[in-house]
Length: 262
Image (cartoon, rainbow, N blue to C red; front, side, top):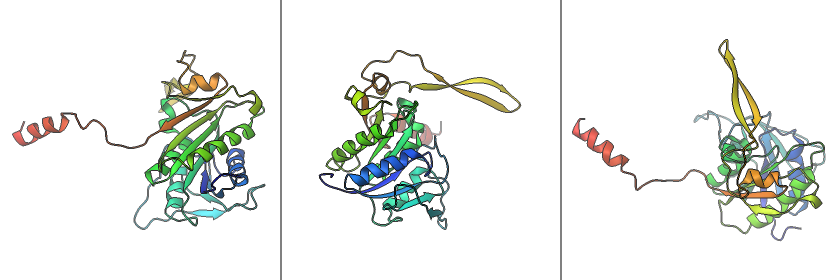
C-alpha cells in the first residue's frame, strides 16, 4: 500500500483504449490511491498542453466507458486532448479534484526538447498550471512491451510526488526491459534530441512529406535520451510557463521608440 494514498487522475494522449493508461491506473489503484481515469476519445499524440477552443458557453463532452480490469475505477472518455481532461478534473468535473495527475504510459520515449510537443508531458505540465503535481510516464517500444516495468516505476515516482511540493512535475522515461534488467535510475537533463527527429523527405501537390528518423547523434550520458538508451530510467523534473528575462532592456527600447515616435 502507498504510505499516503491520494486522489489521482490518470490520463494519456493515446486515447482511453490504450493498454498503457489501463496499466497505469491499475498499478496506482493497487498501491492505495483513489484513482479516476479520464482520457481522450481518440489519439491526441503531439497535442502538447493544448485544450482546444473553449468559449464561455462551451461544453466538454465526455462519456462513461468500461475498461477491462478497471471495474472498480471510474473511467471517462473525453472529447479533447489530455490537458482539457486535466483542467476539467482539477475544476471538479469528475468528482473531488485530484491531488496528482499521472499521464501515460506512453508507448515510446518522450525525451529531449521535443517533449514540448508531447501530449503526455503536456498533461503533467497542465497539472502544475492548475495547482497540482504531475508526472508523465513513457516507455521504450519493442516486442514484447513491458508495461509492468513502467507501471512499477510510476508507482514509486508517485510515492515520492505525494510528499513533494505542490506543482512538482516529473518526466519519467523507462527502458523497455523486464524490471530485473533495468540498470538503474538517473536524474537526467533534457537532451537536444529525442530518440527520433523529424525530417522533410519530399514536397509537392500542397503537401510536405515528414518522416521520423533515428537521430544517430552521440549524446552526453547525463541526458534523458542517452540514459534510456543505456537501459536506465530517466527522471527529469520540469517547469512550465514562468516569467524569464526581466533584466532584458526590450521594454525600455520599445517604449523609447513608441513614445518618441520613431
